[in-house]
Length: 379
Image 1 (cartoon, one colour):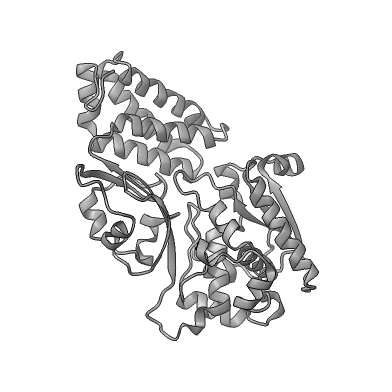
Image 2 (cartoon, rainbow, N blue to C red):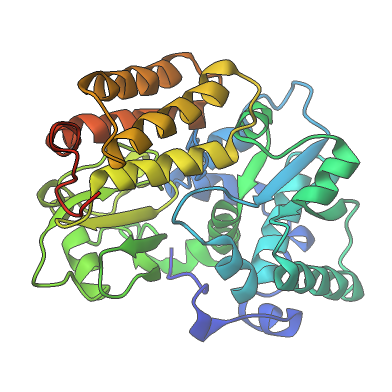
């Protein structure tokens, strides 16, 4: 595939520009067989917790009863990713085009696009794109509904939580839709089977130029880090979090030896990568992850609802210099309990990340417990 047209410098924010670059919307073309073949040759994976192949989703269970609607998840709760606003602002028609065409491929007539409550500008952009789509007289029989989280709850009586998203058969994130639409329009025109498309990464933390970047598949992470301004020369990086804190931390040397490749899809996942330099207190980093986990918990199962509160309690005791040695072991046991017994795969992954970080930086936790002071700041 060629490079995507997702960058700000290539912003396509109206239907005339979209048609100039891509031609008509996909629903006017008979493309299903060729698109499925391209998807098989150029794998696109969802950025949800399952990271399934889009090709497998579209061809699986064709004879069975399908859900009556598709959910486009533009209210992502992935920590440190921030892609949804970027994608909507730069090319709303790319998202709308792919969403409608996937609905037609699956023979589903209802399409729900759910945004964060505070995505007011993005909601107006999508509504304008839908109006342009309708005014252009494209033929379709698909009902498109735009929701924020609150209006979705009022209409469906359902909260957007990890457990709900995991229970839905057809949930697509914006980046998956954008990749699919681009491939469907011009991917086969690249003329080279060696070109495998691009991946959007959200680089954050202790890197000189944190931002959202788009890189060709195959680029080395060493080269990617250089593009983002590299690290502060006065500090080394002690760990890297990938997949928006859904994976355990890894050391920087291992990370820089890898390339951006589909074989590392489980490592990259949603593309959120956070660098932590040597003078950061890992106890406070873990506390941030715990607070994020609490914010997205649906609260229906005891391990998650009770467990993260308990994790926060033990961490605060350590940070305040009030802890005893059993607080460290109790913290680990609580994180393990959440990982083993919670009902959501997303929460399980967060708990595994928390537990792995506690074990990897055991010395920092034990130092704080024994000395009533952290390694990197006074209590």
